[in-house]
Length: 40
Image 1 (cartoon, one colour):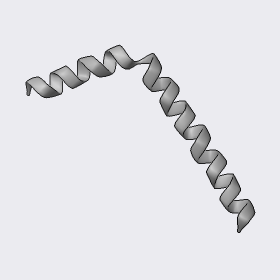
Image 2 (cartoon, helix red, strand yellow; image 1 turned 90 degrees about the vertical axis):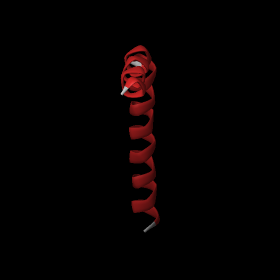
Image 3 (cartoon, helix red, strand yellow; image 1 turned 180 degrees about the vertical axis):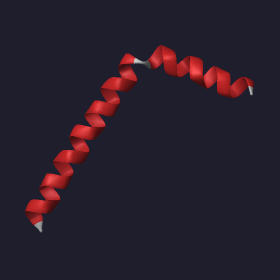
Image 4 (cartoon, helix red, strand yellow; image 1 turned 30 degrees about the vertical axis):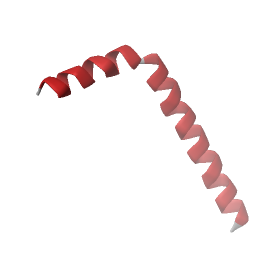
């Protein structure tokens, strides 16, 4: 079970890193989307 947990933790960490890097790349686009949502 410890091995499965360790693998799962690594997958989650790599996924979060990917999401974080994408967020840093596309921050201007995200802000534009937020403004559109706010205007609605």
